[in-house]
Image 1 (cartoon, helix red, strand yellow):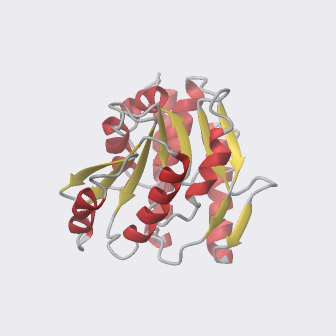
Image 2 (spheres, rainbow, N blue to C red):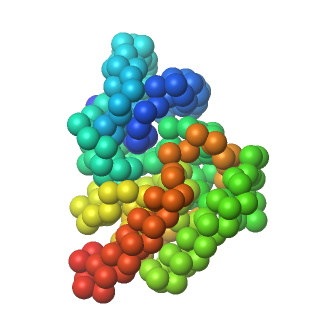
Length: 249
């Protein structure tokens, strides 16, 4: 069986120093893909890793060279530009009908894609939410991180005027044509990229559906509170200014 020239799904996975856990995540993803028989390209964005992530990713091409449903793509950045930059690079490289944004730690299990797929006929973006009443948090964050996350989402709603409950969940399914249009206008390289992506989507009246998902905290998260919270708040102001000056139109 030959792989389709154009896959059904593109899964974008940003990677920064992920040598210790990426193989475990890839195994879970590919097991799901083969079970569902989805022609899929896995796009790994090596965002300037300083460990052996690049070597580990390169070896994946050999491991899955004969897989019926999986195509491996690797995009490497010389420097660490940030998750937003990596996501944008991944979207530009995507050729599938739909794009799934997915964290390397699989804090949301890949099987939760089933829930998002239920809404693709009626929505342009189906995004995972940890705040919906049907969400299941199996391993919560610390009280401090939970409080800061809620505060950030509240500020994002107010500053950006986008009525969503969870801006920063990394599990999002987007129509590829919509994602590419949004990516052309994205300018935020680091953690506030989610807020910018959703603000652009709202400006252009793309239909967004929040879906409650299963989620667990990863204690090895790359988010550093002392540094990234301040940067993200500054970027929210930048997004607001950009929207006021019609830079996303």
